[in-house]
Image (cartoon, rainbow, N blue to C red):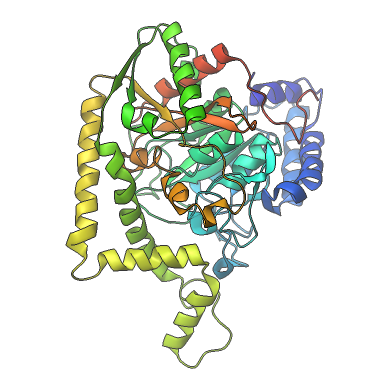
Length: 486
C-alpha cells in the first residue's frame, strides 16, 4: 500500500499530527543515521515549522495536498534557499543558495516537510556514494555494503524509512542504481519532463531530476507534482503534463515487452535469474514478451563517459574560487590560486573526470573521441526509436550486480565501470525508466529490474511496475526507521 496515502489519511483523520509525524522521523534519523550516514544536514527546525503550518490548516478545515505534512528528503545537489547545498564537496562548503530548485519549490508549495539533505557522490560523480567528502552512505540491508550512487544517501534514507520519499538526480543511473541496491523504487523521468532549474549541473544534456520512493504508487504521486514546464529551464518540455497516478491500475494484458539480450547476458547469475523470473510474471499477466538483440547498447557506456566528462569539464570550470567556490587560503598569484583551489578542494574522482573531459575536447582529440561519442549517441537514439515502434516497454536488470562491499571499487575497477552498463543508454537517449525491486541475492541484498519506456511514457512504465508490484507481493522492504503502523 502507498505510504503517502496511508499517512495522508492518518493526518486527515487526526490519528496523528504532522508535528508528531515529523518528530517520529527526526527521532529515527537521530537514531539510525550514525550507522547509515544517509543525511549530511538535518533541517529539524524547518521540518517542525512546516509541520505546524499543516496542522493549523487541518484544524481549520482547509483542503491539503496528498503530500502536505509528509516527511521527505532532498539530495545535496538540489538547491534549497538558505539551506547549505554542497554537492558533498569541499569547494561548496558553506554555500547557501538564494533560490529553490523548481522541483523542490513545487513540493514545498504543496506542504512537503523537508527533513534534510542527503549524502551523494561528490558532484554526483560515482556509483557507490564513496566519493562524498562526508564519507560513504551505507546500505540499510547490510551496512558492510554501499548504498550505490550517486544518490546513495537518498536511497538509503528511503529504504530505511528515514524519509517517505526523496528527490535525487540521475545522469547515468544515479537514481535507479542506488534504488536497486537499496531495494526501493527509483524513477528517472524523460529528459525535459521535470525542470532542472536549481539542480547543480554535472552533465547538462544528461542530468535529470528523479524520484526515490518505497513503492510505485508513491513515486507516481510525487512525479505528478514535480513534472511540468518551467520557463527557467530552456530544456523543459512545454506540452507534457501526464497524470501518472490515475493510470496505475490500467490492465496491462496485451502489452508488448522487449528484452535486450546484450544487457541481460552481462548480468550476474543471481541478478539474471531474478529478472527472468519477473519477466515470466509479466507473461502470466498477459504481456507479450520477446527477446531481441540491440548491439548499440554495449557502446553506450564508453560514449557516456566521454560525453559526461566533457560536459563536466565545462560545467565545473566555474568553480575557481573567484566566480564560485571556496578559494585556497595561501597563494602567490591568481593562476596559482585557481590551481591550488581546484587541487585542494575537488576530490580525486572529480579531478579525474575533469581532466578526462578536458582531454577529449582538446585540439586533435575532439574528432577522435567526443565527435565519435556523439555519433554513437545519435545512433543509439535512432535504434531506440525503431525499437519502440515494436514494443511498449523494455525490461533489463537495473545493475549487472548487487551492491558492492565498502571500498571494493578501489580494486574492482572493471566492476565499477560496468555498474552503470544497463542505465546509461536511457540517459543518452533521454528516455524514462524506473527500477523496481524484483528479489534478493544469496546475501539478502536487493535486486532491481529496470523498465524503460519511450519518451513521455512514464504513465505506462509506472503502470507496468505497479501491476508487477501487486503480483509479486513484498520482498521485505527494510524498516530500520519509522514503522508506518503509527
